[in-house]
Image (tube, rainbow, N blue to C red):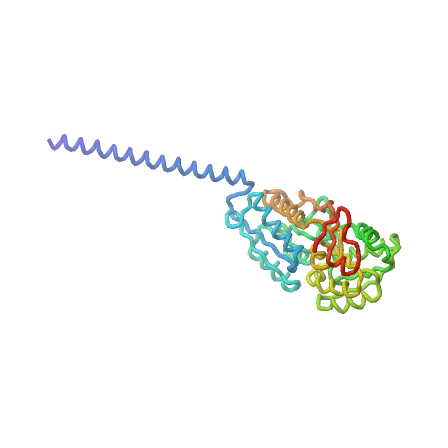
Amino acid sequence: MKKGLALVLASMMMGMCVGCGSSAQNSEVASRDASSKSDSVAENNGATEEMKTVAIVQYVEHPSLDTIRESIIEELEVKGYVEGQNIKIDYQNAQADQSNLNTIASKFVGEKADIIIAIATPAAQAAAAATSDIPVVFSAVTDPLSAKLVDNLESPSGNVTGTSDAIPVDQTFELCKELTPDVQKIGFLYTASEVNSQSVIEEAKTLAADYGFEFEESTITNPSELQQAAEILAGKVDAIYTPIDNGIASAMQVLAEVGKNAGIPVYVGADSMVADGGYATVGIKYEDLGVKTADMVAEILGGKSVSEVPVATLDQFYKVINKQTGEAIKAPVDVEGATIVE
């Protein structure tokens, strides 16, 4: 009797162990299946499961640069890089202060960001100076060569590439001739320390005679000087031209009021500057610039080297005119093919 009972108990124990082994195997299979599905989803999204840090430094707040940043983040999500899932976005704004830029760039390098996005030329220069290892992708840099960010637009040799917002000056001069043909003398107004503005103004000086323009040049060192400089310049010229200048863009409404009070057109380098009261521009869509920048970031996060990602310049330009400003200075606002803002 005891012997029979022992045999039954032994049989039951063996069954339980077999059941335990089967359960463990099923759990392992389920785990592998879940991992495989997760990897598949990540692959389909063009991203990896590893959390990466995308650091963004912006020189100053104004609509064009804000639009670029927002567009970059939206397009990265389209590409499968979603904040909180597989990327962490660290956004910092320098508020147009060089010491802030240097501090922010050093912070990103110290924290070993996987990639740095630098919006506007001063931000790009600070990021490039801070690291030769971490990829830096710039946006809204008008002249990357003059800014010494790259030595070759087609095949950058260092850790820096990005997108340029360069717009041919001749198209702005042609727009000036079309809209305000009586203009004979143009005032060039820009921030002396902004390399992007310097290179555009040099091009404008070279081209002015070809369009029959005389010119007067005036510079500021910071936006607080803008009103006085603009008022003095407005008394000497028939129109004012300012390029894609971050300092002036941040205080564009001041310049716009000077132009209206003087009754002269203010031609600018960006559509946001028209929205803030400038008269007209031939510009690009900054949403498109942000999308292109994000595409480059995604390529690098996906494994491409910086040298395989050429600097990009948009080639689609648009006429933009401010209706209220045009009416205030008695200039045309009903131009065929132009985008009209109020």
